[in-house]
Amino acid sequence: MRPLLITDGAHLKETYKGTNLVLVGMDGNNQIVPIATCVSQGETGESWTWFLLKFKECIGEVPNLAIITDRHPAIILACNTIFPNAFHGYCCRHLMMNCKMKSDKLQALYWKTCKAYTPEKFQRRVSDLRGFRPEAYKKFKETGFETWSRAMCPADRYNYMTSNSAESINNLTRHVRKAPITQLMEWYIALLQKWYCARRDKHKDLVYPVGEPSSWVRPDGLQVVKPPNMNFRTSGRPKNTDCIKSQGGEPIQVRCSRCGVRGYNRTTCHEPIANYQDSTQPRLKRSRQTRQESNIHVDWGGHSQEYEAAYTNNYVRSQEYEAAYTNNYVRSQEYQSTYNNMNGSSQG
Image (tube, rainbow, N blue to C red; front, side):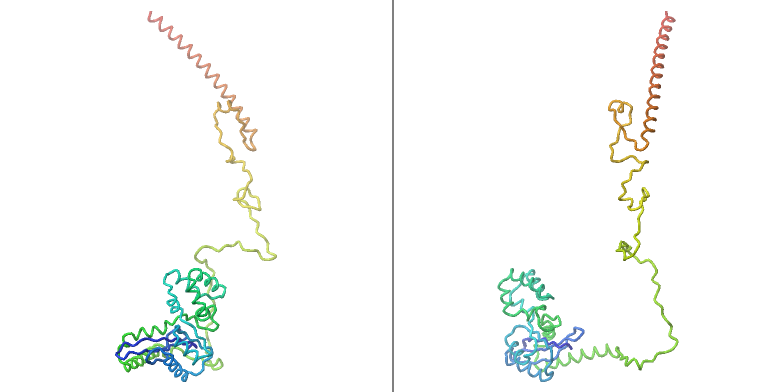
């Protein structure tokens, strides 16, 4: 087990009353291990001192021992008397209840202060706590930051900030504490036997010792297992290939797919393309009347001379078509007049 003791007391509910004192430890799998228990007249300094003294006679002096309790004066006196070299830390939950921190915001800030890993972060949290509750900060400081803070703890309390492990045992005995003392002790014995028997049957012969490497038997003809072939495309988005080139590596030149020039891509290309009209210029009307009235000069790109000649030729032809249309219209009017005169003479 870890060199850690968590202790607490619970009142009996039988006719003669009394207090049930409990000591529990924690194993490497964070499981609760009940170690010792007794029944006394109350949580007095004499009772706790006798209980811890008898317990020390069984385990002796343990180096780097840590004890987690509440702030009961009798427990503090007994721990300082029997285990003067051990670290004595306080339960953070009991300390929070003693300071009457009931709001969720204060409790969240308090637990962040308790569980801070570095002294710098602890100082920031405790400064915020002092701003919200100055009277609670005063009590925390009088208690000693090293007794309830993880960052300021001079010893190793194995991240156990409360005495909930001992209170869990007290919760199991809440009904049997109504029975006589002899039945309470028999219940403790039966509980431990049940736990150890169940765990022994569950984990029997699961761990086999391997012995020294020189005593290992190595059979012949073992098949060599090669690593699997991982040359396949993994699922998900491909990784970014824009990495920093190594020293001496050749840079990769990109080519624009629009104009064919090296050094940039299509997104940053600004070269003019002859086959496309510049989209930045305003669109102009193509009617002959608009061109004649406004005399607008149109930029046709690199083929402006050819386009201008074609436009002039088309304009000359349109003038010829206009003259021919006018001549035909005049002739049609003459034919209509002659037809009318002939029609009048025939009627007369």
